[in-house]
Amino acid sequence: MFVTSPLSMMDIGGEGVLFIVFCISCLVFFSRWRTRHERGKLPPGPVPLPIIGNMLQLGNHEVVKSIMALYEKYGPVFTIYMGLRRVVVICGYDAVREALIAQAEDFSERGDLPTFNKVFRKYGVVFSSGETWKQLRRFSLWTLRDFGFGKRSIEDRIQEEAKYLVEELRKTKEMPFDPTFFFSKVTSNIICSIVFGNRFDYDDKEFLTLLQMMNNSFQLSSSFWGQSELDLFLNDVAHDISHLQPYPTVKEVFILKNMSLPSSASVE
Image (cartoon, rainbow, N blue to C red; front, side, top):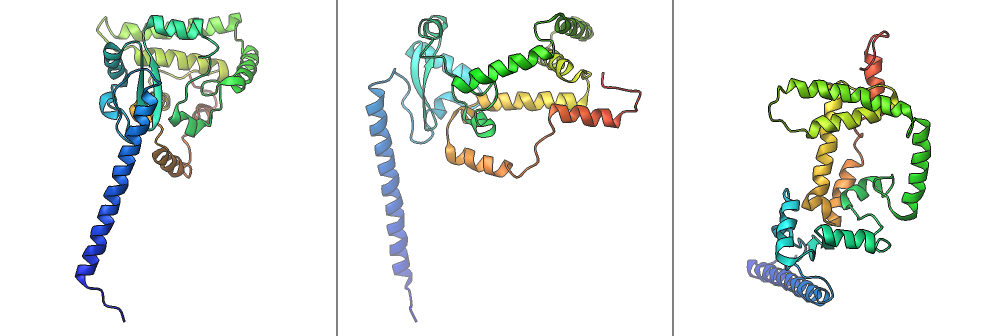
């Protein structure tokens, strides 16, 4: 039978705390050394903290405003850290034009979005890049032509949806309003009309829910956490949501909607 005294347990606990403090100190020292070594070869920028990078300078919801403030301080090209991910930011018309036009070959790839990469695995026209994107683009254009892309039939659908937009604008009675959702509804309805042959009413609950979810996803992708590459956090989230049934796609919403309506009715 072994008997452990409280004093020995305290010694073990104290040694454990000292070991943790030592490991954290080594991590901070190594991070700062690596940052200084790399920063000598990179554009200037704010000093990052270990693990979280420049989260404090960028915030979470006002990333664009924070980047513009850094642009005023460091110039059109500067370096920031989105968590563990190093990002060189190009800001301003002249700098962006130089990158995308004068050096198009070097800047032709689409930037990584860690949040979307975890979900879409870099598939699709919007989220892929390189040779995969070229192949998907050719296939998508070829498929869209079958739906009337570039033909008179699409112009008719656009003009029809424009009439609904004018009616909605008249309902505002010349009062100030946020046009964001108005044009989101128009664009989404044109796509739905081309692909599914039907459109949603602007007050349809399923339609508004889909638009809100899309808006939330874009807000997440533009936030600090959406742009950063904190793999442990993202892997946990991806694992948690992998067992959940996904929200019905737009096509499924149309099918369910049409099944719930009388045979003589249809989705407007």
